[in-house]
Length: 188
Image (cartoon, rainbow, N blue to C red; front, side, top):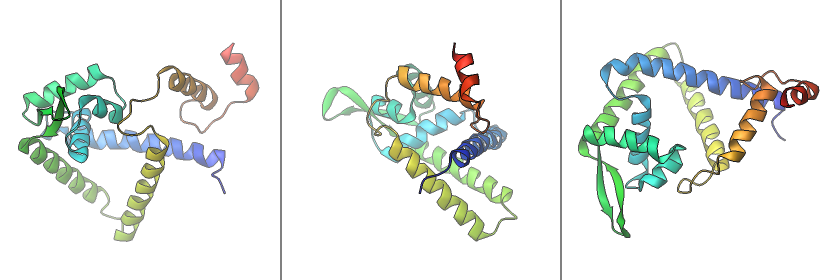
């Protein structure tokens, strides 16, 4: 049995709403760090995946090499990321976390977990565990639909066109589909 269109649209809306709420909570906690959420995301993926090439990291993050290059330069300046020669290809480097990077990342997660614990103070342990399982399940489904972690993302033309078409149909958050006639008028 598949998920109904309106249910999927509501879930898309709730995911975007969750992202905005997380950004708000994260931004409030940024007083502890000069690094932004994008930098922390880069650290997370390097820490999770072990030593990896910048091209593989950019593919996992879904960003271009120039954006990643700027973030890596910042992280190297802080001493959080180190480059070592790739033993399989001397022309390439592998990225890994330094001891300072691992400590920074662990401290960041500890602060965020404590913040979330405070926010969820009126939740039961069961509610929090159920939410965690649902997020894990959704993440696994999304990852299984995405290109493999080491591969480059699919070409930009198709996803951009698909996104524009979806935005036209849904009015940004997926909850308010327009009629086919309205879509055709807009696309002319």
